[in-house]
Image (cartoon, rainbow over the protein chains, first blue to last red):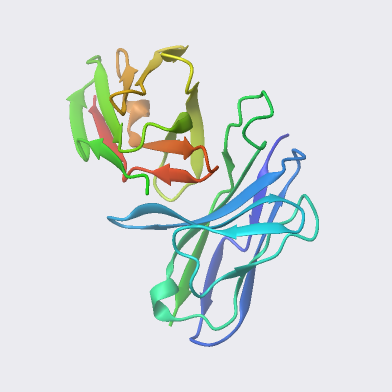
Length: 116
Length: 111
C-alpha cells in the first residue's frame, strides 16, 4: 500500500530539547516536503527536497532543519524547540513535476507537537 | 509569492444540495492545482488534480474546473451527503515546485 508514514503522531516536549520527527515513503518519490498547519493560517511549507542531498527552504524554515540522505526518508529536526513551534506537522511526497505523470501529493497522517 | 484564497470559509447545506467551493490564486504560472479533503484531526486526502493544460477533472460526484488565466478553480460536489462533511483545501503547485495552500472551506452537510 502506498503511504507516507510519520512518527511520532503526538509529541509533548519542553523548550530547548532537541527533537526529530521522522517521515518515510514507500513510493520511490523524489519530491518530499514538510508543512505546518495552524488555525487561521492554513498549511505552510517548511522545507522541501527534490531528491537525495537536495533540500530547499519553503515559506517558514526558521527554527527547523531537514536532511535527505536516502530517497525514502526526510526527517524534520527541531534543534531548540520553542512554544511558537507548537503546531500540526505534515510530511508529503510526490513525483517531481515535469516527469510526465500526475504528481499527486500524498500526505502522512500528521504529527501534533506541543512545546511547553 | 503565490497567494491562494478559498471562499467561503465555511458552508452548511442540507443533504442532497449541490456544493460549490471556490479557490482563487494570484500567479497564473502554475504547474497544477490539487483539491484535498481533510477530516478533523486527520491528514489530507487527494480528491482531484488538474494539470495546468486541463480545464476540468471529474471523479464520481466531484468535478473540478480550472481557469488559469483568471486564477480560479471551482470544486463541485453533486448531491451532497453527510459523509461529505469535512474541510476542503485547494493547493496550487507553482513552476518552482512549491505548493501553496488556501485556508480551506469547512463544509457541513445536514441530514
